[in-house]
Length: 301
Image (tube, rainbow, N blue to C red; front, side):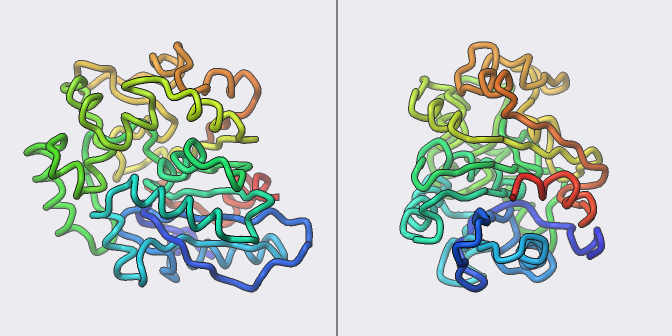
């Protein structure tokens, strides 16, 4: 499989059970959540990933999440369905899947990375073992420089909405990307009105349950793409972001208040060796099968 075939779109929600039932063969099931503009079953993205994992881990059960009753709805919901509703829907589906009751590994692509982190924080049963975030935006974004695939017209509309009022009630409730829009020049507005990201990042108050549940992970793996032209700033893929009050200088996770006050348990997780920061050459969600097998496959066994 070439790197071109693995040029995936951003992450959105999905829950499609694909593949044959898993026997009691010692493998850990894998749950995938796709990105913005993508769907559960695109043969050039999530379908290829699912097939690749099944080939590399014999007998593994791979669940590619589909939000909505079909692929078209799934793709649309990655733009327009309230993220908190999506997370609740996924939590319910995972809890009802008997194949996952012993636990699972989660792999989120682009926005699917932060959505699956919300699942880990809010829904500890069934237990998520390893969380692999591939190009996820854990401190949100402050820009939409390039859109994936055939979605450029939608992204033009999204940019206008974000620029005109990302934190208005209507935009927050009806635009997925607004719910992880993080404006460093309007920090008070972000903390007060962000319906999703400010909540899971403990910006308004510390939810001890979120903190406890995230630390139940065996590993939290974050992949950053060094030539990323989709995510702005790219530091967010390693939980860094722009320093508050300006839009040029960035800070690492370890330099952030979130880490220094350990509001989410990430400092404790790093001390325990549970955080992994991986880098991949190339643009957003572009990697080779060889890179995947070397760096990510070990977390799926």
